[in-house]
Length: 221
Image (tube, rainbow, N blue to C red; front, side, top):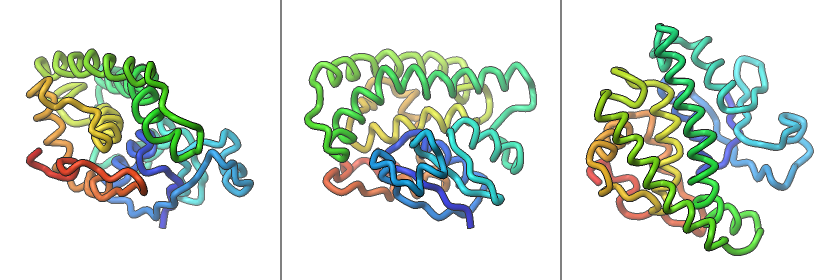
């Protein structure tokens, strides 16, 4: 069986988990305190980051590379369009969420509220939290604009772009940092993603010291 070294609320790990689950690849999840730089883990990934996936006798790191490998070796069901222009748009949006959204929102909300406490790095920086709460409004509005023109974020079918976005938003939803009343179209999109079987393990996550809100695993939220 495949093994995934991960942190439950990491959006990068969640993106990989969604890809694996959508492809029906069974995986053993191993919670990894990567910040402690355990020598055995550092041998798996000298960068000292999660996710790390053991699959097909290979040790893989970096979520984008892992998801590309999964897609190339398990093409069904497809999470990437066949058209090069559409594939470009998927990759652009994956980068948008894993780079821009992560920098402006996830790192300022999730990392401040949760990661600092778990890692013993002190208290949240109120300025970062304020900036993240402001920035997420812009990103939700951008998603709403995309979904006003498309069935899914990157086009007419669900792709890895939707999983990348849902990975970040689900992590933030666990700590009640998403205003689902801001956009009906984004809320409807998330409800569709949330109801997929691939999402079940995410909704079952429990982080000690951080109980999820009641609506977190409710499909009719």
